[in-house]
Length: 126
Image (cartoon, rainbow, N blue to C red; front, side, top):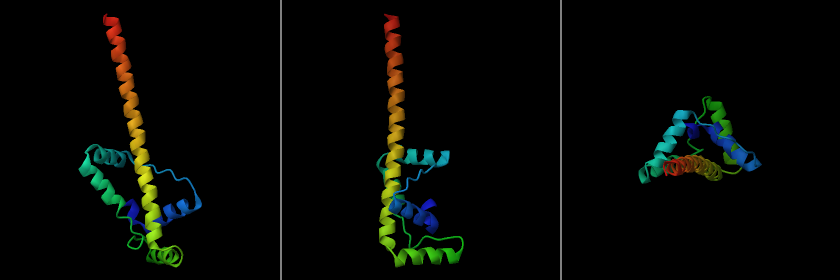
């Protein structure tokens, strides 16, 4: 739903264009859903790529029709819908990769701690 709103897409594009860092914070259930998709392998990755490949500023909507028309006119009269879609897709891909990287770091760290505990247990048992 996040990428079906024209304001959201346009704001992400403007942040890219201006070099503004945007931190995306997901509700825990959305984060869990993303991680489940990633952890489920090829099918899950396809779901994520399907989502990312569907960024479409031309079809996005706004709560107020006047806002939708105004934002779309701005996009159409400046950089165009394709450039906006590509920039936002790239930004969202970077965000997904960052989430995955953070999760991997956490998992590796936990594995290291587990290994250290197991090593310590073996030394004590000797």
